[in-house]
Length: 347
Image (cartoon, rainbow, N blue to C red):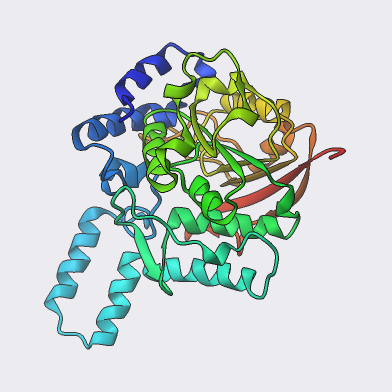
């Protein structure tokens, strides 16, 4: 098991551009404490994971309080409802109906498509002991999986995936995109750049899914002064500061729902490296209106990033398309989780 505490200590010595933004500074403290206590084997059911990097359709992702959920469950237990009514309410409370809606969107987008990869062939692993996962038509999906699958289905409308050999992600959660690529594009190379402690969870997860011998971790690269992309294994999980050592070219860069949790100077630095590594395509999904402010919440940012900021930061790229419905998400309070696709100029 990777020593997350040691990695956190190393992170403390890095440039502020590679440290957690103010949003994650608070979150990381809680996460590392719970991971050290509980271990990685069940990280997908820990409260800090579910609140910060393992997205859910039901609690806590539905924004309802634990007390409200418990009250509703107690009320339902006291009722003698017909089975159909009971199932309807249970599926609504658990988030299954929301998951099914996203699955139907994916299925409709992929219907009759002959283009590779075959996203409908994907089914998610049970590594990490998930409680936020649903079975739909004999396959397993989490909100994380359906977010990425929807984004990749959107991407298929604009490019031929045969040209995608190397995919890099910053802030890859627990490794879902790496798992999807492994199962639908097994010859593609995946690189995840992240901070501990999420780095520790994604390393563990992908080693369980792909196999330890097929995953490069910080233990393999700690002494390197340069890291050649062409020499990396099928999947690589590297700490934030090692992006400076990466040499070579990537075909696709992805960021889903984590740039919005960083400060603008941190995002600009990462995107400078994306440009340096000559990514042909950049696929983003982040909040159009920016993240909540720390001055108003315990977990928030000092300066939010808006959709137009990404275009300003990616000076060598053109915005090709953006979408909220059906491939992104509109919240009940009117915020827009927007998918954006950029292409390198002259590429």
